Length: 453
Image (cartoon, rainbow, N blue to C red; front, side, top):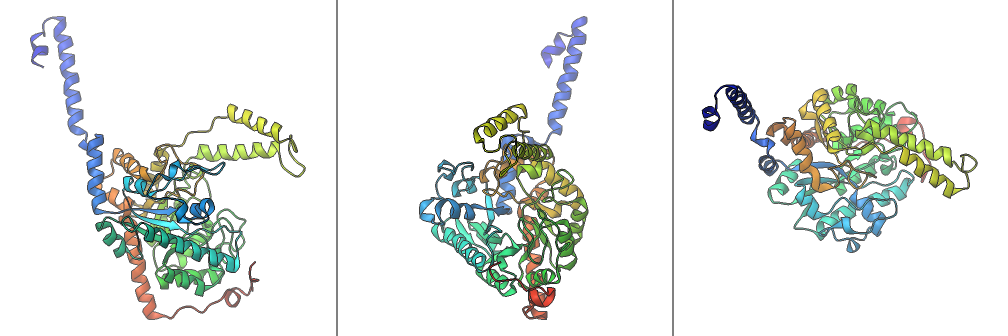
C-alpha cells in the first residue's frame, strides 16, 4: 500500500484512493469471514466434531443388496475392498458402501436395514428377516477390526471411542412381524433396534404413505405394536407410513420417534416426506427426522420429471393392450429415447439435501434432524453424495451455511443418541410397570388373517 500512496498525485490520486478503499474492503471481508470457509479449516472443524460425536446414518440397504447380488454369501463380496468396482446388475448402480468408504466418510454408527419385500408374507417373511439379521452379525464377525454390533446408545459411544463402526439393525416394514408381538420381541432379542411400521404397502394394522388409505392410521392392534415397542426399547420408525399413521403413532408413543430416512414435504410434496404440521408434532415428541438422499424425495423438479417419464412410458407401451407402440419394444424404446433427449433430467445435488436439513431445523428445531441416506437402497444419488464416503461433504455444505460445531454434532449423531437413550429410559420404566403384551390382531381388530397371506 506504500507504493499506492506514493503515486497518489492528480488523477492518479483518485485511482489510488479507489484502490485503497477496495483493498480495505477486501481486508475487512477477509477478517469477517470465518476461517472455516477454507477447505483445510473445514476439515479441521469436522475432524474435531467427529472425534467427539459419531456420525450416525439411519438407513443403509447393503444387506439386501448382498442377498440379491451374492445370495447372502459374504465370501463373494469383500467389504474391505472397493465394492464400487464389482459388476452391477443391469439397470442398477454399483454398490455405494464398503469399509474403506465408510472410514473415509467418518461413519461412526450405521443402522443396517434388514428389509424384506412386501410381497413376502407370513412365516417366510419372518425367516428371511432373521436371515438378514444374521447377515449383519456375520458382517461384523468377518470384519472385527472395523465393524461391531451395538444395541444401546452407550454401545455406540464406546465403540466410537474404540475406533469401530457401531452396527445396528433396523427392520424395514411391519409386514415382517407377521402380525405377531412375540415375533416383534424375538427381533428385539436378536438385536433389532427399530421397526418401520410399514414399507410401501399397508399392513393389516397400519397405512403406508404409498398405498390407498385402509385404516386411516393405526388400528387398535397397530397402537398396541407401538406400545410394545416402547416397552421393549425399540425405536418407532415412521418412514414410509402415511401422515395419518404418523399422527396416530405420535399420539400413542411414550418415547421419541424416528423417521429413519425421510425428508421435508414442504420442499417436495411426496407422501414419503414429512409435512410441517407433523414436524411440529415431532418437536413436541422429541423425535428426529433423518434426511433421505433419494433424488425424487429431495428435488421437486426431479419428482415431476420422474412422473412425466413414467407417463410417457405408459403412453408408448402399456401391456396387454394399451400404448402407441404396444408389442413393438424397439419403437417404444426409440420413442422414450427421443423423449429423454427433449426433456433432460433435472440435476439434483448435495445442496438439495442440505436444503431439507435446514428446513427441518427451521420448523422442528436443530434437536430434531439427522442423516438417513438410504444408500444402496436408492436408484440414483444426488451429485456430491455418490456413496458413504461423501457424508463429510454434506456437513461441509452446512458449515458454509453457518452451522456451528454444536449444531453439526447434533445433526451428525448427538440427536439420534439422545433419542435412543430416551427410548431406553422409557423402556426401563415400562418394563417395571407392565408385562409383555399378549394382544393379538384378531382380539383387538376382530380380523383373523390367514397364515401366509
